[in-house]
Length: 432
Image 1: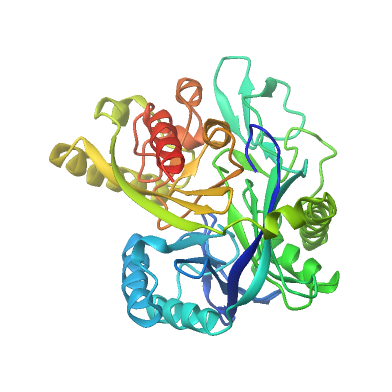
Image 2: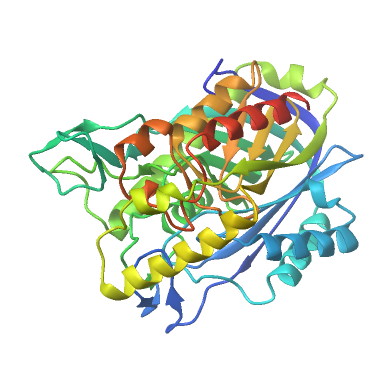
């Protein structure tokens, strides 16, 4: 965890509780994640809310992953109030994030109430564990933006397109792992942190959690039958699970979804086994565990009115163009009211690990900068946390144009925003 020194850690003295609840919608439910409407024809695999409560005996963190494309700040705020009332965990210690799957519904009914019940259930199962933090590399995430000869960028070009020069930027193949091991050595709960759009089956009309769900399914069949595994997506704004410009790339489909899930799960298992066998376990048992969390609201600049005229919408239907223009008018009104918008950034300390939570689709370059900026600490960067405010491209990407830079509600922040988030996130994590 962290683009700086790759070191793991083992710590004893923690208490962990887990719970999960199905949110699988019925056939006929509208699925989000594509520009064209889709309705579920059936269910390939179930969707879940998953809760992991981690305590050092004095303070506790609640982590909740949701097999949804996004969560809303209004729902998360209401859930935190209920969780604090029912479980006693302060609102600032409750971190809720979406896996960003593209084959699920737009939301969940009674979301705050269900999260509060889930966290209370997890609290009721607290048991002593050893925490293991480590990382691995899974080279199956790719930058989805490509430069053309004319200096412009395109997302998901047609394979073999002749005017493609090459990828615009890097990927981030690092898989961060937090695993809670019971007295018998089996996994009780886990967090997997990897940056990639879950779109291996993104165009399907079957409900699916995509590869995050497949990773947990693999772990359960590979000797960890009771594990509750949360997938925490990273800075995935410009990443996808396909080597897009490769004419022989792996095709969409459930076969690849399961293969990628197995790769993530197997890499996590091997990394944890390596860490436990390293000899750090005995040392870790003697360390005093520590759980802490901080939250900060940061005012970030919105794009100027000039960008409305300067950027062009993505090609689409007349109806899509009308909807985009309507969105731009809303943004114009918002910008006239205030040149900035506040976002919530949070950071949590768990032993030697740091977790940074942010509500955007950060480009992966920023995630790498945050991880390397938290000097000497293994760090996870968790996206789609507490809300989803859209893409945060690099300034280079803004210069090249393309889908993620078009002016609409999912790309409304100024080009310098990414660096401001990096600075604030590093300071927040370092302050723990």
